[in-house]
Amino acid sequence: MNSYGALEESGVAVVDFSAYLDGSNKQGVGNAIFSSFKDVGFVCLLNHGVPLEMIAKIFGATKALFAQPMEVKELARHPPLGTDNRGYSSPGREKIRQPNANGDVETPRPTVPDFREHFECGSEDSTEIDNIWPPADVLPGFKETCLEYFWLCYGVELNLLRALALGMGLEEDYLCRIHSIPDEGNQLRLLHYPSVPLESLRNETVERIGAHTDFASITLLLQDEVGGLEIEDPREPGLYRAIPPVPGALVVNAGDFLMRWSNDTIRSTMHRVRAPPGSETPDGMIAERYSIPYVSTNDAKTVIDCIPGTWDAERPKKYEPISAGEYVQKRQAASY
Image (cartoon, rainbow, N blue to C red; front, side, top):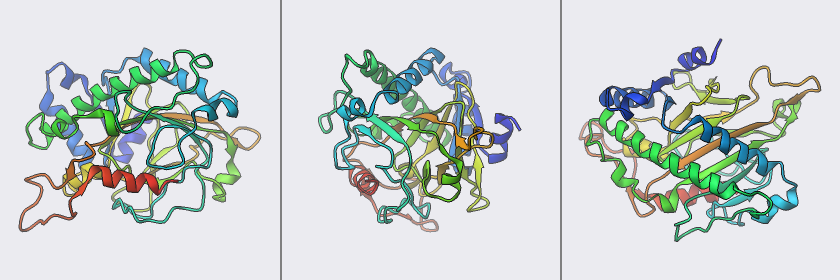
């Protein structure tokens, strides 16, 4: 089965975003995104506005960083607190899993480590969190490439939110107004999953990423050719279906914030990373994997509450209001 066939089986819509960008069918694109978010919480976006050259450039920067010796990567070490989401984290330091799909921030941390390393950064204009960069003389241009890609993703984010708002029957800029300050919460993550023995994954000695939902509004994900992303089938809980990589595409998923804003009209779907079929090497190892998520969140002081029109007397609100900052801090602190 090819990538498009697997996506069709999973229920994830493949949407050509150019019809929104050129104005030829804004409403149709918005409807398609909203429909896929309602059904499975994911959509595969083509022609999203990030050039292929930029995608190759950010993957190149990612591989260059993780190819460095540990002592070099540790020069940009992630702070001890999980809430300070900047810098480099070595394999096994972060643990992500939750046993249900309701964004439960009180879930105990897992005992099985996620075997991956990652680097996090955000806007240089943040007044809350400073970026932590590796030395420029070791990785020339790394910082500039990350920031260039970050701001391109922010542009995609705003256009996607506008399209989604149309699909939801809202004013086109409704969702953008509550995502207007990217300096504080939005982040870019560079992920590297080192090669590991297949047996270690089978016996759950280690994981790549355990099943979880994303805490924010939307995630824009680049996958390399290895793949491994799986999402839970909402029609068959406990069954996970592969979301194979499509060259040049962004895999977009809705997070807990959109789920709460929409009073569960939109799904924040459990997903994980496993070893994809055919990735085992002759010596029993699983090929290394790279992926690059950009995470969009709400302004920290924004109160996450159900959007008018998503609730009434017959369908009451399912969630108590909570500030975006408080929710994010709880989820991040539980990961370390």
